[in-house]
Image (cartoon, rainbow, N blue to C red; front, side, top):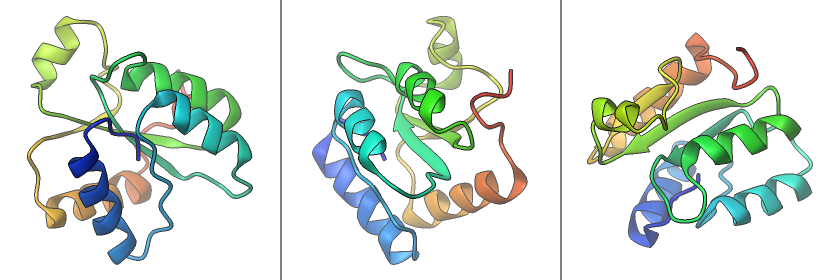
Length: 124
């Protein structure tokens, strides 16, 4: 989970841990890359905010996919998908969950993305 807003990051990480997921949380793309490089296991899913300082969610996903090609991506954002798409940030093949969302909606969306196979980032 990559999210620059601390309260959102903590909430999402707590919700996912309560759902039984092993969660790695990062405050930004740089931290996410560092943690992912050191992590020994499989990273099945990247949940990332789209608009963040220094490195947006698309950039984080692109860089992480080079070391984690099996990883799927779920974007979260307070911006509409049209607004994000207008800025060229979000690839339409990937899932977007609009903020605000409930813990139940988040859990359901993550299950769907993992099970139903949203594209792995490397699938172009």
